[in-house]
Image (cartoon, rainbow, N blue to C red; front, side, top):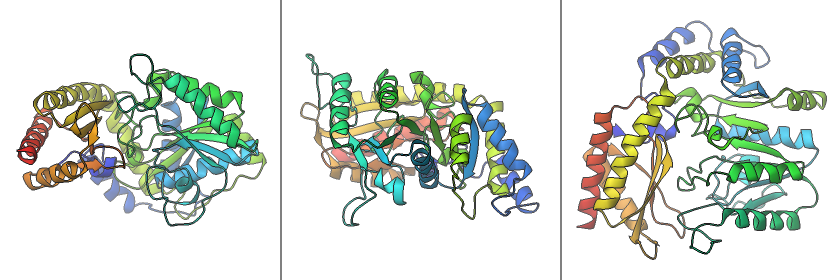
Length: 391
């Protein structure tokens, strides 16, 4: 089975990478778990390497387990440091299924569970393929959209805006990449209101998009960065990274985020091995090259199949959206499910995002260790599945 999802967007080095296997076997026989307040050598080393890979002033690291947990810790920190409680996120966001993370998640999972934490506000997702605010040529007018969004934020706020929590590329939202310039403008909106900018790079961090971190393209540096999925290459490892100043204020105010598996040595050792491989193999450059190969293959599928409405994304995180009609962009939900089943039967694991009002969008995220031949095989299977499903 060829996996075009990297095991739920996590296994960036593929499944059972020999160096990851060796690290787990060695570390589990040495030291796997400690009291969370004790710092082991793997934890200190990984924290230093994460900080060294990031621009100033991001230099303080807390190691956790899951993406939801890292976002919980980040939101909790932002609220304590700012003394405020309101959190702004994209309307198609996915940040996790626990308290504060779920409250900032809008793409699904909100119905039927009662009220979430007060103060959560959604803003429109800047979707260039399905624009809501358009310019004279019908293109997304994201500056006007952002201005209108924060007019509404200001109208709803009680004067307690703490942070904006967003993904550089919305993965579960349908692989939506905000246009160049958007995040710089968003960061300015945050500064004007005394808000912190939290970027969730669960799926985009560590070379997947062709740079070590997706935010590098936009020339912005978040106040708080959260990492997960890719950091552990499939094992449960996450991190919150912030500045010395924010950490200092949080510490002075008694910041507390404490779980059984904070700072576990076993997964920290795995994280160090992930950094070893990414560094040695120049995986950012590899993702750029392979991403170009994958993108060209997907564009060829778009030329061959009328049901392919859009191809988007960056590096080895690409989206392919299916539609019933290219002109109206009418969704093709049943088709997406059918193509997914056919791909699986042919030996290719795919993931399709199906949200109301959209066609089925495939999230295509092969491991960074993929070969061009493996990408070609996956594209060949997807081509065949599309042909069979629309025959």
